[in-house]
Image (cartoon, rainbow, N blue to C red; front, side, top):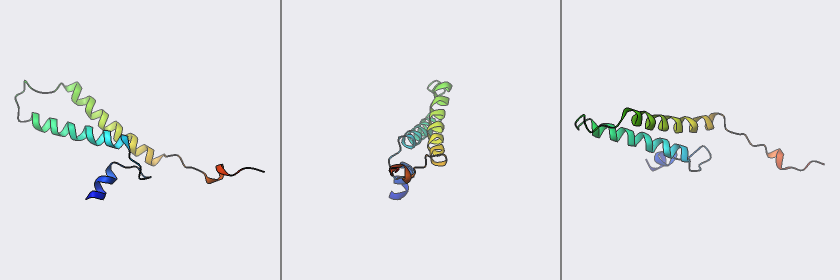
Length: 84
């Protein structure tokens, strides 16, 4: 379980990923807020624009993390060699 949680917040190079952290945090915050507001009155609800903004932030951050994984830069070891 610990390895799974660690894998959620690291990229393919095992470095911490701020995009994944922000995406997961925004998604969890949105789910908790909407769940808590389902038990409260309609007068105490977040604005629809705020809910959409947090959802777009979460999806955008997680989407950027996945595109980096797919289209990530490939480093050549030949670039470190000097040419004669």
